[in-house]
Length: 50
Image (cartoon, rainbow, N blue to C red; front, side, top):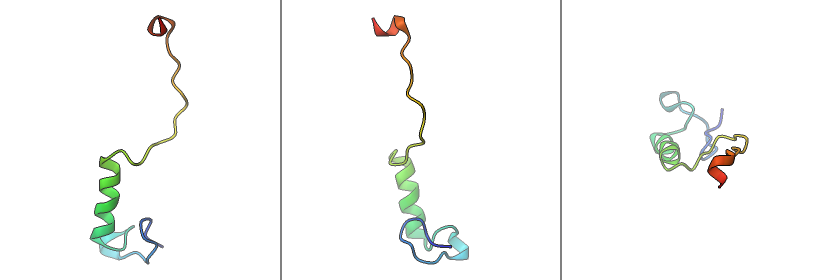
């Protein structure tokens, strides 16, 4: 497998990443809301739209 951050081969102790650095980068991306899960657009209630 390849590291999802840098593309290097993964290391067993940091799987699925190659290093602690790439694992920390990924964690930072989650904590800063850099990753988003796709979701259908929210519909506004008629009361909220007024």
